[in-house]
Length: 103
Image (cartoon, rainbow, N blue to C red; front, top):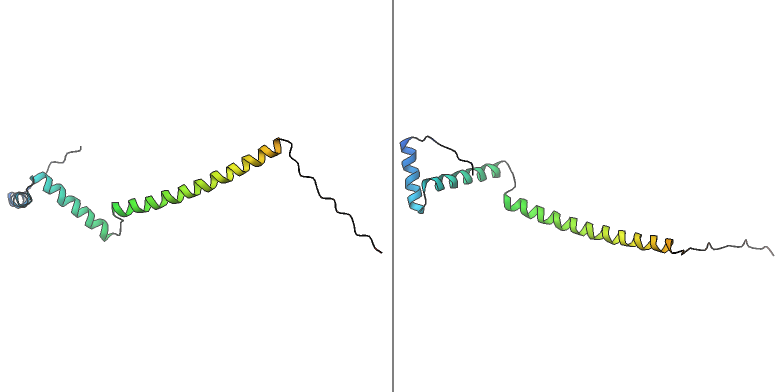
C-alpha cells in the first residue's frame, strides 16, 4: 500500500489524536477516514456519482448487455438453422403464376 508521510503542527496532531481516541481508533486511521470523507464530499459537490451509484449503473448496463447477448444468440441460432436447411438441399420452389385469360 502506498505510504504518505505528513508533517503536522502539534496542535493539529493533538486534535487528531483526541478525535481518534473518541472513536477508539489510531491517528492514522482517523486521518484516512477524514481524507475519505473529504474526497466523497468533493465528488458530491462536483456531481460525480458515488461508488454505490456507479455500481448500480454498471449492474443495469450488465443486465442490458445480457439481454442484448441473448437476443443476438437467438438470432445467430436462427441463422445457423437456416444455413443448415439450405445446405441440406432444402429449396423453395417459386410459385408459378399463370396470366389471367380474357374471356
